[in-house]
Image (tube, rainbow, N blue to C red; front, side, top):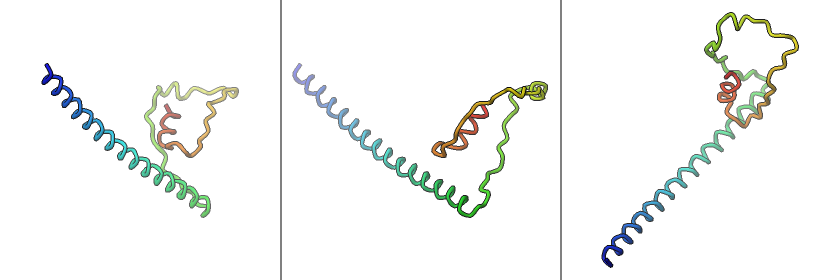
Length: 104
């Protein structure tokens, strides 16, 4: 019985060491991703700042989305009283994801 408990304890220690190593690897990867994210944000801010400073149009080509409705629905006249969704873009989120979500 004592030997069984010692073996279980040794196995538990090995599991704990493996978990600690996995945690350390995960934390290192998280730090790496954090630094990459910050670099990308700085680059985006610099790029946006350059476009405004140079007074150039920094545009990307328009995206093409599949037509979700039949042409007869798309041809329907929208009433003048219709108010569409109001969405603000803070430049902190991914613009591609924002456009996709808005279009959807």
